[in-house]
Length: 139
Image (cartoon, rainbow, N blue to C red; front, side):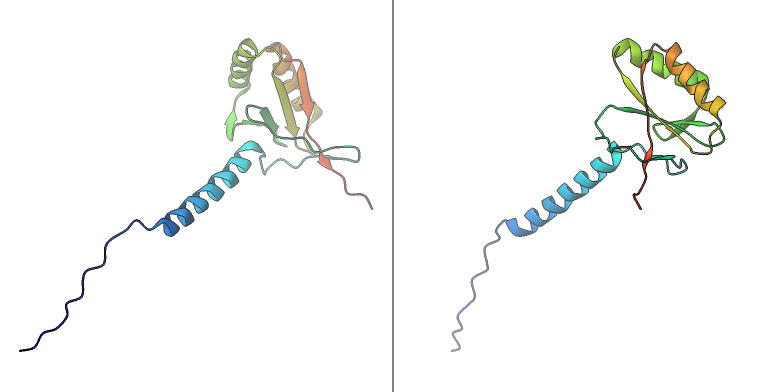
């Protein structure tokens, strides 16, 4: 007779190393997307440069209004009308009286279009308005 030793089946266990790898990849993904979500930059807006500008820290909840060179207003990635901007800013100023607004105007923007957006901010009782500029490289 032929007696062969039978192999015992391996016990299935929870593999922790692949799970840790997946969690680390997800963590990196969410950190990177969170950083991009903080910077409300419209790529069609080319900021004017200033030699004394300093980089500002982006924070959650900041309001950035982008004004393109043709005068269109972009808020949260959407092109909106002046009335929609006024309504949103009115709602914000009622909820947060000291809400700051950052204006990112294109360097080829007409002064009249920038004043139009500033008047909308002023009409919404928002007085804390900052202008975004690009840092000028020293030669």
